View 1 (spheres, rainbow, N blue to C red):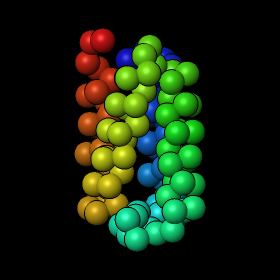
View 2: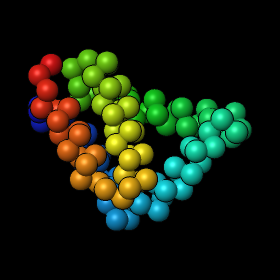
View 3: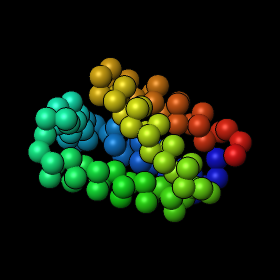
Amino acid sequence: AAEDEKVLLRFWDLLTGNSSFAKLAMLSMSLTFGPQVKKSTRQALEKQSLAWIATLRKHFKTDQLAETAFLLGQGAMIDYLLTGNKVRGRKCLEAFLREPR
C-alpha cells in the first residue's frame, strides 16, 4: 500500500485502542437505533461520516477508493464491536490495501 493509504491502518489502530472501546460501543448503540433517532442526530452522524470520507480522499487516488475504504472500515468496526476481535478487521483492511488499483 502507498504510504498515504496506510492512514487507514493508523485510524484502525487508534479506533480499536483500549481507550476507545467504550466510546465506540456507545456510538454503536446509537447507530442500532438509527432509524428511530431524531433527524438532527442522523444529520450529525452523516456530517461526521462525510468528514471521515473527506479525510480519506486526501490519501487515496480516487473518491471511490476513499469511500470504499470508509465503508469497509465501518463494516470492520461493526464486527469488532460485536466480537471484540480487532485482528480480523485489521487483516481485512490490510488485504484491501494490498489489492492493485
